[in-house]
Image 1 (cartoon, rainbow, N blue to C red):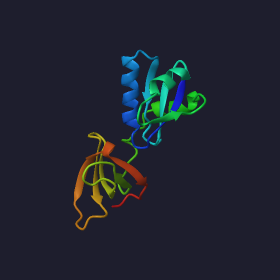
Image 2: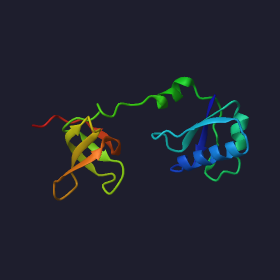
Image 3: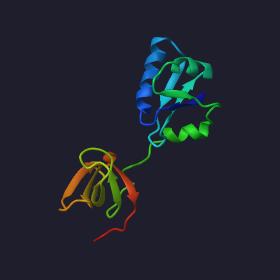
Image 4: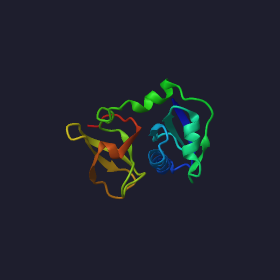
Length: 149
């Protein structure tokens, strides 16, 4: 059964690691901890009973408590499906860089290399336009664009 644990926003991964280490060290029956990227302030934990989660999460700095109830299978299963990022991008799309020096900057896709899982972009917020090649994992789609010739 999956349960939702409320944590400090932005500290989801740290709280999940502490929960798993504590569960392993003290032999709690916690089977897994899921940290969804798009859900801030919450993590999913899998255990036989909610009591196990309450015990393991006591005295953990970033844990704010457990929400009442059990998570339905349909709600948690969407996080276990791999999304095909290779087919997601096309020339002319507007993307946002997720990490690195250009974090949060918007750019236009000028080339997509599906074999190498790379995308070439031109930053929109830059004074000079120069192409940058990044892995598709480092950008997220903001807006679908038209293919430009």
